[in-house]
Length: 609
Image 1 (cartoon, rainbow, N blue to C red):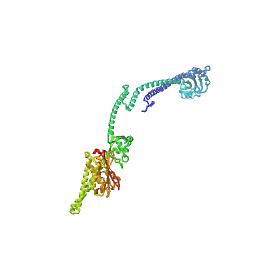
Image 2 (spheres, helix red, strand yellow):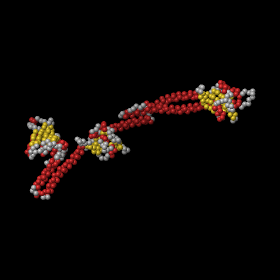
Image 3 (spheres, one colour):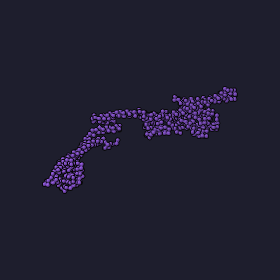
Image 4 (spheres, rainbow, N blue to C red):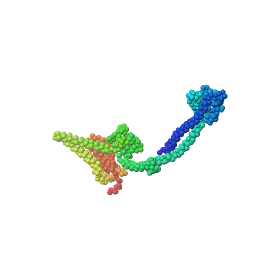
């Protein structure tokens, strides 16, 4: 799991939020306090100055309204005396008295600025205060000193008439210096408060984040499968309740995991030992589970098909979509047959749905029905062949019997021929039924053969001798048989039937003047018996089918010769029952060789004496 960054930690976030809240509160309080304090100091400063100015205005108004004699001091001298009190008057830099009519400066409190007395004032605020009859003031910057000053112009009224004005310049920089000192004190206090708040915030955050950290470690351990750890409960508040709930959740998850693991093992065991293939998908149709039988059926690797679309896995891209499979109610037949091998699967689909009805996936069960399809095809072919083989002689017999019933029995030439054909067809049906009964017995699970030790060389010679005596064609029988005895365990009657079927076919398809060769070869643990003829041979594409039931290379010729198409099929069943195998080799126009093997244990000849 990725480590949490320092600034993303809830511990740091909690302390920062706590400190920021205190900082905002302090700033709000500080701004309000400083602004109010500044306003109060300025108001007090200006009020005290105005009180002195008002007293000055009263004295000046008295002097300006006094009747003067030549012996009395001039108005300028009296005003100069009055303004002496403002020389070096602390915060007041200069006070001027201006007459309203001529705007002449009557006096100034500044000793070094007496030259302006008698001159006209150029101050705009003086003129405004006289015209508007109200005080005019402003805070300005004194360029020579760089300090702030407060300028005040107050009109002097006599009754309702403005007779003059007092222009005052005061040093207000002290007020701002006090505010600067107060701001420094406030900033220092804020810093100390922030430090104390941060320390307290860290301690407080630890009490909250410690159990959360423990729960995080427990969650990480649970993610790794460790459910043995428990979260420590530090108190019975909301966080303590959360810790107890987390421990209870851990216990429940441990029980659920154990149950899930048990079910998973059961499911895994079931899927592993199922003979059918099982494929599960997610809601998008991608494979999330496939058992070993399904992987073997589809000839794929379980690791490579995970997350692959099921329609691609089943090779259904051209015919079906995943939505089609969700709606499929019947089975789908998947034919993966090749020219050399037949392979057919049946796929059944089941939709996985949540309780809400939404599709959560799809289950596909695969059944290998290759053998079943083969058996069904063979059964259909067998029924068709039996029906055909029985219908042909029966149709012929009915035709001839109807002809005899219609009067042909009275014809001495035709009647015997008709009766002979009917007899031959009857014998053919009897042979067919007998062969079918033989195959039926061989297919029976409780069929048992009478096995005994047989000297196969002598037994084979006796069979050949019978055909030597009974043959009607001009065919030579050549023997390549060992001079010594070869004993095999076999059912003599059934083996006689095998040899009769093979030799009959060899003689039947041999041309006049041809030759049939008989041989026995000894292998390490088997003997190989071969019967070769010089007939027309068998086409290459038919070699593997001549042992199938009712299969005939040349159907017309075989039926004409009275064959049922079951002789080699019976031979194959009997040889297989003996633990051997049978096969054929052929060249068209040169002949055919039918060979079969039988289990053989080599034994010294004197052991049988």
